Amino acid sequence: MTSWGRWTMGGAGSLLMAAGAWYLHGRFVAVTVRGESMAPTLLPGDRVLIRLGAAGLRPGAVAVVAAPGPGPARGWRTDPPASKDLSAVPWSLKRVVAVAGDAMPDGVVRRAPRVPPGHFVAIGDHPLSHDSKQYGPCPVDQVLGVVVRRF
Image (cartoon, rainbow, N blue to C red; front, side, top):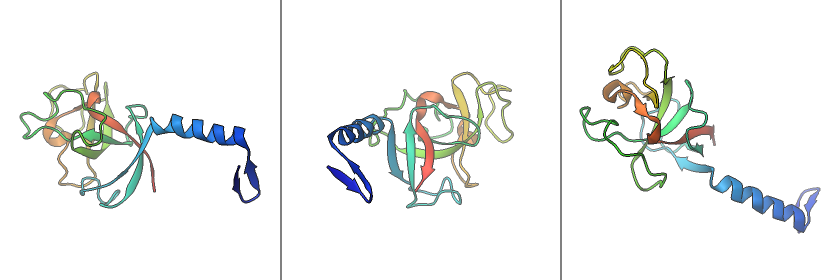
């Protein structure tokens, strides 16, 4: 039996807690911010909870994306879909500024007047962030997840 103050859970309650933890385990991950791409909003050492996948990818959201390939000529355009393995690729936090169909924001590498299908514009809050300003729109398949909460 598990007890929290006045509340007590028997075997069924513990089973529900375990099932809930299993359900959430594959959908969320907590990560520690490294680097200053999102400063001053998120600073090195801050912890955030990420919902895995591209659900919630909308302007204003903060997404965790695979860092683009070396050099603006390559960027995100030739990268294969990002692995969901946290240690497989370097990840970056970026703010979603525009999504597919939106007008391409000023200051972003333009290949079209609108954000193409399957892409979004990702820009760090720090002025020196490397993002869609240099590499153009980010493919949705480069998203690990979307920040849902800061600890």
